[in-house]
Image (cartoon, rainbow, N blue to C red):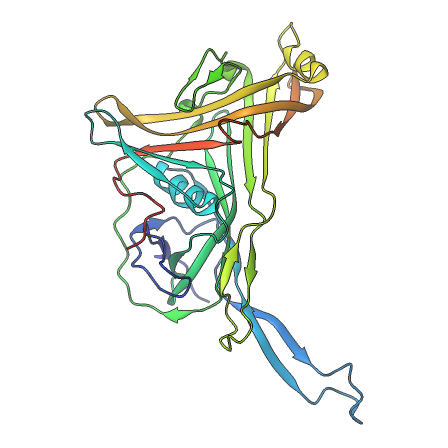
Length: 337
C-alpha cells in the first residue's frame, strides 16, 4: 500500500513554445478528488486477424501513446485562468487603473487551430513525473447555494512521461471562490467591456453550471517514430452550454422567455476579496447572446423550481463568450518564454 499523503500537482503558467518543449511549473494545484495522470497505449497491434498457421498471434507492436484525465477542485482565479486560457487558446492581460491587479480576458476565437500546451508535474505520494504537452479540451464551472465554485478541466497530453525532481511550487495566496461571491444576471446590454441593465436573479438561483468543450483531437504526425502526439487541434465546432436551477417567481418569467424565444445577454460575475485598491479577485463570465431552450418545472422542499438550459449563440460583434479573471498576475496566461 502507498499513501497519497504529500501528493501534489503543478502546472506551468507559461505555455510551451512547441508541444515537446517543457516549461518550469509554477502553480501548484490540489491533488485530492482528481484523476491520476499516466500515459497508456493508444493503439496496440497484434496479428490476431491474419492467417499465419498459428492459433494465437505471433506479432505485436505499440503504435502510439495516449494520455487523458481530469482535474477537479475548488476554483480560484488562478486555476480558472490557467485552464480557461488553455481551452480557449488566448488571454489578453491588462492592468486595472492605478492598481497592481490585472484582468485576463479569454474569448472564443476562430483563429485558434492548435491549442496551447503546458507542462504538468504530478507527485502521487510515491513517485514524481513530468508530462510535457498537456492541453485542455474543455472545462466546467459550477456553483450552488452553500457551496464552493467548482472547476473541472478535461485534459489530454502528448503521451510522454519523465522522472522529475522539481520542488513543489509555493501555494497561491488566493482564496477559493464560493456561492457568496456569485451573481447571475440575465438581460441588459454588453459593449465588449461591461454589462449594464441586467436584472439579478441570484436570490432565486439554486445552482448553475457553465460547460465548454472545444472538440480537440490529438494528431500523430506521419513519419514521427516517437508514438507521441505531434499536435492538439481544436475541433470544427465548440460547444457551450449553461444550466441553472431557479426558484419560480409569480411572473413565470423563465417560461415566458422560453416560449417567446427571447435572446438576451447572460452575465455571471463571481467577485471575491480585494486584490488591490478597487480591484477584486474574481471571475467574470459574459455570454453576449443566449436563448432559453428548456425550462422544466419541478418542486423541491415545497418550493417550485425550474431547471433551465440555455443555448449559446454567436453575437456578430462580441462573439459567443468572454471570460475575465482578475488577480495579481501581470503576465498573460497564453504567453510563452
